[in-house]
Image (cartoon, rainbow, N blue to C red; front, side, top):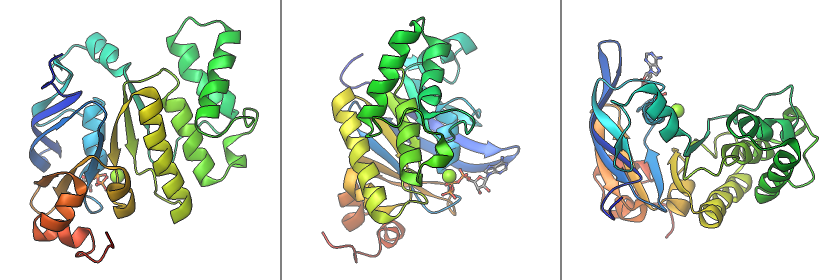
Length: 252
Ligand SMILES: Nc1ncnc2c1ncn2[C@@H]1O[C@H](COP(=O)(O)OP(=O)(O)OP(=O)(O)O)[C@@H](O)[C@H]1O
Ligand SMILES: [Mg+2]
């Protein structure tokens, strides 16, 4: 991969449902080490974009690449191989409620590796410790606070040492201090594991706090209207983007 190749490249992507195209002409590149933010008001297509990155939805036009490799046009076995490099945290953590935290995190390891049970237990212990949940192996998701559930979801997302983490609305339904701690954890994991992150959010504090670059989707126009470092977009972006950031009312 050359320096210019993105970890993820999106070219000419149009997304829709049936005949209705929601967003078109998406072009952006996520580079190694980025915390790449996809932002915009509710309903603008953020989650839909994540689904396209995962092949859960097919584009109306355009393509997604992982590194130099085409993803959208690839056969299922190639897509599967490319997605092995990707860890996902969906909105709401989506843990199995009938399984302990350890069992939840062990699941992808049992499914995709040939590690013996002892080694899996050790990896699970390590991943839970990495997200600040060391010692909570035996608890069930419903015994945890919202913030802890998201941490557990992150532990599961990093179980297979992904190069890329896709995270949908990390701070949704968390109180601000808990949300900021989760933001810090995302940065910590990026640094400790060398991952690249794509974070979908409309939380301005998260965007300014951890985003290296951001893409703003505008539902009304059905396209991206700005792309760049969040702090720059906030001050010099188009009016709707500045308004989204609070019209400059956010202290520097
Ligand atoms: N399965 C579907 N069928 C038809 N339209 C859909 C479907 N899922 C989403 N949409 C529409 O696509 C648009 C984008 O939805 P999406 O869930 O991607 O928005 P979002 O930016 O993630 O919003 P939020 O911030 O509320 O999570 C919305 O107008 C929504 O109504
Ligand atoms: Mg969404």
